[in-house]
Length: 386
Image (cartoon, rainbow, N blue to C red):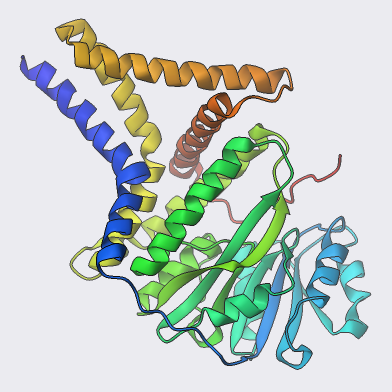
């Protein structure tokens, strides 16, 4: 083989190994380590005071339902405060929230359209409860959600992340993806710590909260800051929030671009957490779950191009098999796109490759957007009209 052939083979092998590590080997490694050395986690039995903080920007369609949902939570009224922050809303959001003032709902209107992270920083400054739970306006909690979040705060835990479940919708690939991600979260929690939160439902010790820069994506950057402070982030699958699935897969693409763009910025601000000498367990988790995952579009492109070129230059059977397998996968994804165009229900064997490709397109665009324009500070409310 020539030097060029060796280079192509090395690129192909490296890309395959990186993809296997983030999607297959990483959860398998966590499973094996946890089986050899199971964690001994205790459950919190106390009833700390809690403030539920609800993020809102032009949420007149759902904010009333969210408040009603919050008032039905199974947690002692004397221990639970509910605050809605309005990030300069221009619709009836503030008016609706104020109508619940007699029920103890507090509105904090923050002028200037400063973004979710800045709003959270400002609201937490005024909170004196033991714990702070962060939620989105369209995330409806099961009645026992707060109770289960509280139970997750054992010694050394600074943040507990709940479970987001999507109800309804047509994005079957997302449903499978979230089931896969739930398993990884549980494995990570048992191993050491989660590497991110979920804006729909996560709780932080008030004393552990770290004020974040405005361009940070809070549900990713806050858990990182808590780990830097010496505490862990754990997963509580019984603390359930529910949202409706995005109806169109293109909306999922747009959402992923926004998330990845801001997440790259937070990752760059926390590169020290990738140092295996200071935090070996967490560095391993952050690199395998986030860095390699977000770079997977690059690895996919390199694998396709290098295997195609290797067929041309060497004609080895193994390269033909690898290249043909990729072409088959992308053909199934293309078929999924056609099903989407004609508004047909695609079988899982087609929809999952389609969703995987769309997700990777989102990650690629998110990286490009971050490199080109920097992070997005504010967010737009999803159009939920039918």
